[in-house]
Image (cartoon, rainbow, N blue to C red; front, side, top):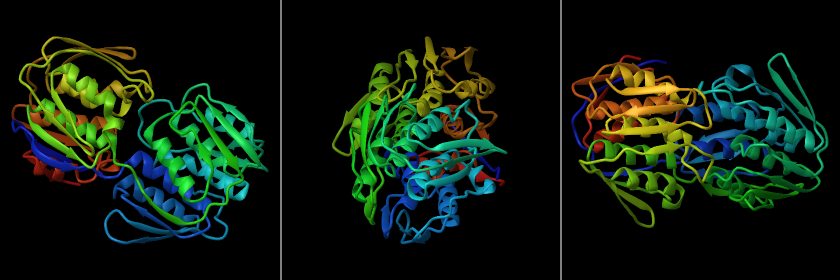
Length: 418
């Protein structure tokens, strides 16, 4: 744990970078593996800390895990996965709660600890549990564990908020229910669609993913097969913002541009040039950038996972910008660390008023979560002098070799300590 990045600012990012598989798609797909009854070849899996934690979890449940080169896994579920998930592994990541839906569908019983992960604010389990109860499960919470059990019957599930995790858990649980389940006000994120596509590749019957109403016809007998995880739109967006901040010219390769439309729109609004091709995006930064108003929203709105990076960008854009964080109350903690670097940011509730200062100063700062860490690395790229970003284990939970990829574009980052 720990360690830091030492960054020398002042270099414009130039060149081409290849995006890895999506963390937020790989985790629910791996959580769904215990539902299957055959060998699965999973490709484009990012070798990051959160994925390693999920692999350890499903291995503990009895899934055989073999690696075939970087990013490719051979997974063989057991005849009957264990129904109990251990605390010491589950506390390492939020997505451990997705094993509830998976194990409930396969075994009719799941006992999973309340999850860990980044402290970006309250992410209650109430919508997840409401979905399980609607399907007929008995749900109890005791001693830090959630236990769900029972025979499931298809029904209509209304989500009060389009929660990604609750949608994914409900979708997996519905695969074990008798009859059709309809999830109303479902999350529309590309990662939800990827999970549905994975389930369908294995033999499931999920329709409507990517819309507000998902239909699952159960029970599903899931077999093995091959699947490739979608590219990581948040990693791609991080490089795109970095190109604009440094006044660079970067081609972000192996992406799905439609997944990045909210980011593309905002970068064009701020004054950057963005060119879209079938599987790549070129971003060119310009000297004269414009302030803007940014509000995070569920997909297809602007993603909360890119708000800290955009806040870092706006901190050097002359004029007054407004950032409103509508999803996670702690996501604006990035402001405190950017202030150490000379940023002028005032936070009131879930809004931040950003007065662009033109330039930042190198300083010792600390990553308080995954996306905050990435944003501070970008800030270090444009700061005068040397920046040290501490607690980089947060960054490594979600980015594959971020320092190496940025260095390949001309950045000057070295690892120290840890």
